[in-house]
Length: 253
Image 1 (cartoon, helix red, strand yellow):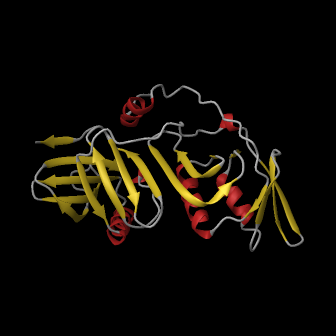
Image 2 (cartoon, helix red, strand yellow):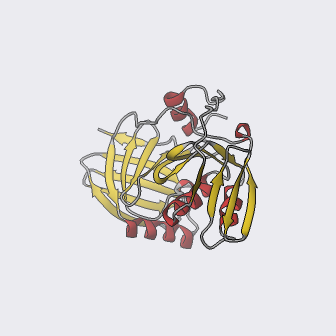
Image 3 (cartoon, one colour):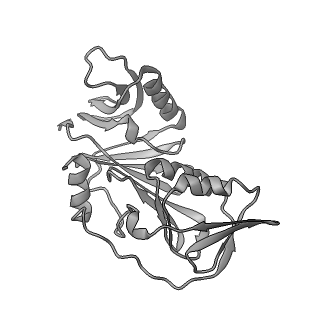
């Protein structure tokens, strides 16, 4: 099925059905711990995609199964090998069985999780069963709207969407102000909630699904392209999300 993200995704990456080979890298045997900060990111990533392919190094990346949300983060930890986890929530819960777990990678098909006299062997998943982002880095095709979304504003918008059971998040420019509005666009009598987030001399309306705003709480620098793609860059983490817009935008120059 072709959707808004499909069009943006294929413009950036090409064929959505193309498979990307897994690179084999030399193992650097290592015992490591995962910080609370990185655990927060991984918990968030598990809401985007239940599975993840960890790459060797300090970068985490994931993409939703529908390919309408992509997230990437740079972390302090240096993973010594590439490995797949099919159920990321389960993996995180397994770490929660320990107070301060250590992960021991030996180049085999599992990782040893240990602390004191406690041990757990967690087996990796076949990378071919995991929907993973392509190797190519993503960039916005254009930047047509940009503003800062404060942590408190994001929190209130999402809270209002929950209170009123609203499905849509619109970014609206009226020639003076940029507003973010949560509403139900299919219901003419829908409750709504709005916050002014910036200034503009343009008139436009760009729309997201609230269910796609799966981002870590915090402040973000937001950039939006009329080519149906947006970027949310975190002020607190080395973290960026790319989120698809709905196709029915309006724009007046």
